[in-house]
Image 1: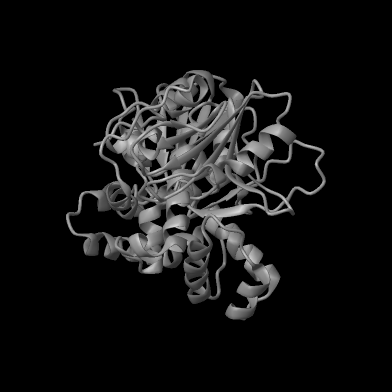
Image 2: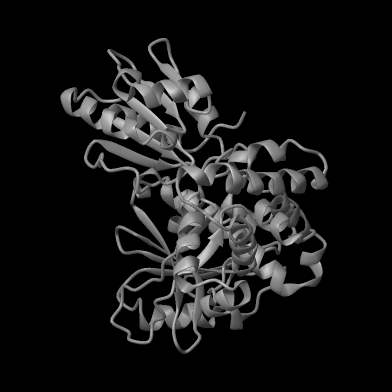
Length: 407
């Protein structure tokens, strides 16, 4: 069992909020993490159990009745009436730590949820395992950025990182020895989500189209999607595409990364990027093999950037709104893969390269950003790569090995 970085935040939230929502994709570890918090006064109920599901539907108020301790309700989105009952309960009793709710969909976006728990609930996202969690490391990368305290490569060349990428971060397939077994698990996983879980959140009439779209978005992961091209190839309307994209986000299969817009520079691109939330899932959807990455720079670029995104967003979300993650692009085709800004206005630009060497030309957009958009702020430019050494490319500009994300 892996110790999750978010455990500390969950425990703190239960001491300061009446209810906590732990959300994330199915099978990412929410149930296991919740059970680590159980004590003698805790009650655990899962709505994947048919008997408990029917009891909750029949008597929501009685189902959530609680005199002390914490009630953990797994997959709470399956009975939306429970949210209304919980709101009433925590309004009448303001004791902290009454309910820990888990959900495999974004509960607060469901049309069946009519009540808001605003001011009463803390929402925490549990993602698939990061490489740092798998290796039982502490989350240290943001401190390394702040202190410019980087380390050389410790054996993680491109081939080794490709292996990590193809395994992904879902706990169950990580235990498999064969990559073919992992691929089979991921494909079954997608089928289960589309055929079983989606009925809780959306009336999807064309499940085949949603499955096709999932693979298409995987092929665009880390890039800007071309909606007109997608609607034309799939034969669906723009409104349907937008609805399906929302479903993929709300089931935590994809994330949308917003652009950095904290500037009056008029030529900034305001389009968001989409990312698949697990690289093992991405590779399985696209039928890619690890050796493909050694020969195809487009494939390696997409999946390495997606991998880095999933490491970074997990680190940023740990910090309770002290950091924000963006991307940057403008109409002059200057692009920076990731921008991290902290609440002290320090900015970090990060470029991702799957290769083992870096040239000064790969810092040109970082240097332009520093000189034009971050003139009065502290700015550090980083190129993450699969080479051996930490190398300076000028003031506050560094090429650093990718293992700094978890070492």
